[in-house]
Image 1 (cartoon, rainbow, N blue to C red):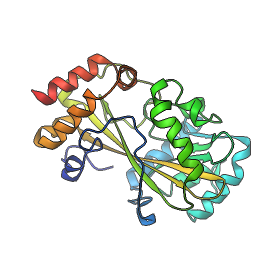
Image 2: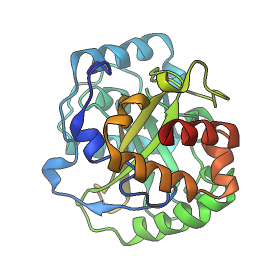
Image 3: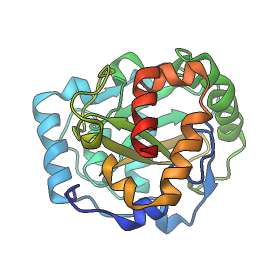
Image 4: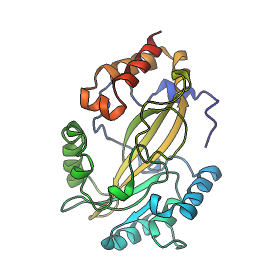
Length: 263
């Protein structure tokens, strides 16, 4: 993982919140297949995954009984041949930098198998086997803004065509594992971390889609060098409804960030 001591100019010139569009929207855009997994997995990220597979396997890997066929199809698609772990999704996850979630395309669109080594505010053990509608249920407005559109999208998505969206959060640290909400972040707001999640969705067979998440980190204080990024973040924060604010971390957190970027 690249050091966040350095400022990624490309990140800040093309921030995940764009020009201030609403945060919780589907926003999937088609990309070339070569950009499905845009970068190779680094040695440090592979070590992070291997450590969790060795020490917290049940926290990062979850599968349903009927998911074997989908895992086999994905392994074939990504040319993963060796099986070292009890679940093939674990081996597949070491071939790419992303966390991986296999979703059924038909029926209830349930989460069938997942390898999630860099979660943000969620635990796959509580999500596995559930439909997308159930997964988004804790935040009612998310079902309206993300849940319903993504159900229709998965039903109608073209085969083998990846789509991209950017999600983002702000944490008090750059730890990859956040199984539960952290509450109000510790430390000074200038030391808080923007966590960007490059998310792709690709229907890799008639029956299954892959939702993949690749995480990047930048110090929030770096935004002060980029006026357009400040304006976009301000608009995005102003556009959240109360339920979205609560999901993001609460009014105090949002106000603290807002005060910092306009100071």
